[in-house]
Image (cartoon, rainbow, N blue to C red; front, side, top):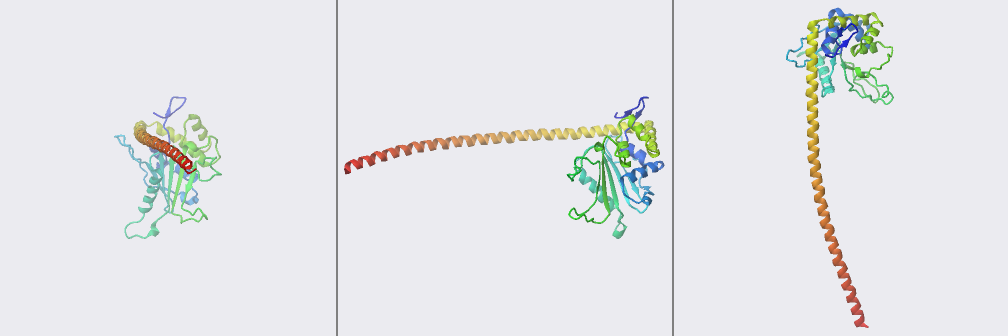
Length: 309
C-alpha cells in the first residue's frame, strides 16, 4: 500500500487519493481547511467564502473494486458553484470530460420554463497527479507553472465573454521543490506530500495547516478508511493495468500493421525495381538496334557516294 511511514512506524494515508481528500475537506467540521484552500486558489471576495457543502457525505468505495468519481461540491454565499475533483490517472479525453462536467453544472441550474438569470458562476478545480497542461506562453515555459486559471476570452484583445465559468488546474508533479511563499504552494505541497518531514514542515507554517496535518493523521488511524483506501488503491492499479494493457496492445497492433505495410511497400518496390530492370533492358536493346541501323545507313551513304563519283 502506498503510504507515508513515520519513524514511529505509523502509516499515513496520502491526501491525493480522492476519497481521503473528500474525507478531510468534505467534512463539515473541517470548514476552515476548505475555506483556506479555496482562498489560496480562487480570487473571490472575502464574503464569498461563507460556503455551503452541497454533498457533504462521503460516497462509499465500490466493493467490486470499480472506480467511481468522488468530488467535493460547494456553494458560495452568492450562489456560485465550485466543484473540486482529484484525478490520479491520466484518462483519455480529460479536457473534454472536464468541459462536460462544467457544462452539466450550468445546465442543472435551470429547470423547464425557468429564466437564464438563475444561472450562477461555476468553477471547476481539477487537481491531478500528472502533468497535462502545456504552457502557451514562451516566457513562462521554463517556469513550469503548476496552477492555471482558464476563462472564456478573446486572445486578440483580451475581452472576456461574460463571467459564468472558470476552470482551475493544479498539477502536483509541477510543484517547485522550493516554496514560492504562497498559500497555494503550501496546499499543493500538502496534497502531494510524500514524507513525514514535509508534514512536519507544513504543520509549522500555520495553524490551519497544522489542523490539516492533524486530520491526515486522524483519518489514517481509521481501520474502516484503511480498508477503503486499500480497495481504492487496488482499483487504481487495476485501472492502470487495464490502460497499460490496452496501450501495449495498441502498440503491438500498430507494429504488426506497420510491418504489414512495410512488407507491402517492399514488395511494391521490388516490383517497380523489376519493371525498371525490364524497361532498362528494353532501352539497351533499342539502343543496340539504333546503333546497328545507324551503322547500316552510314555504309549505305558511303556506297552511294562512291557510285556517284
